[in-house]
Length: 406
Image (cartoon, rainbow, N blue to C red; front, side, top):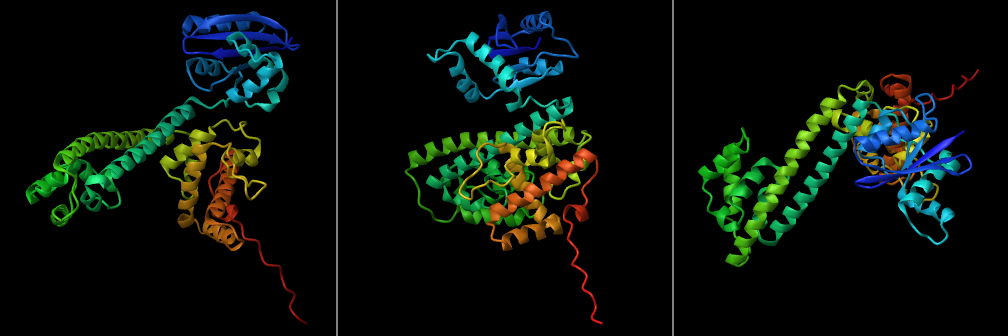
């Protein structure tokens, strides 16, 4: 007898429902979100035929949390059902649109009973791949937080301290250590204008600068003393206090992004797939960790390269006016960086991009097409366990032989 399990999860308890192949309710229970609750669930599944060789599949509306992690660790098929999809199925069982935890658990179990093929179970990634995913995603979140904090600080400085934007318009901008140190010590135009060369030199050394200190000191000294429009004194002081707070947030975001980047790269380099992934042009340890975090190391997850390309939004859409919305945003983001870097690292990638541009593609479309090509090559290399080969990835067809005139 086939049995299907649905779990309606909550923060402190979970409702469980088991149904048979006809949709009849076999058992229901409410378990706590703790170790005894997990054991209660395992005992309930075992009572209805759950074994290591033939586990009962489980449907739940999340892919995270301790309960999901423990269920995945047992090797049991776990399906993370989108809550919006589950809501559509609910109308089959309750025309009145009533909602209850027990009903939701039954709905999830019946989704597996009737439409398991339309949903994908969570991949069976290795423990190391899951660890890389945690670190790589956290690092990417930290980068986004750093960008947001930097934009807030830039917008705030524009309102009362334009000299700071001019002073720190270099490559790293406001995220540069010197910018953070000086703005924390002199957050207003008046305070910055009073900084001596000795103080500026000390700030630069404190920020870790080792070369060109004298030239940078003279530049900053001149910029801070140039005439600019000013806010009223009390308003300027108040905005300076706000700057100190924004600088602290930006400094924390910068430190977090750097620390998590190091941790993600160290974990990624221990993975067996790291050698293959980093053999591709445009992929280093950090971007490679982001790629591995999203595709995982369960090679049965995608049915061929086309499935992986669709997952990453690299596959072409059927209408020119349509943009693909259902995708893995993180993989699409790293794919943009990967394709852009590959343009200078791979002659074949550059030639492929140029051909797409000559065919009428815009920059974004040509870059997405290149990402599609590179991702398909990566899928093949991971399956056959071989590194990247430029000659095979961008094979140029030979010109047809022309018979010599007699």
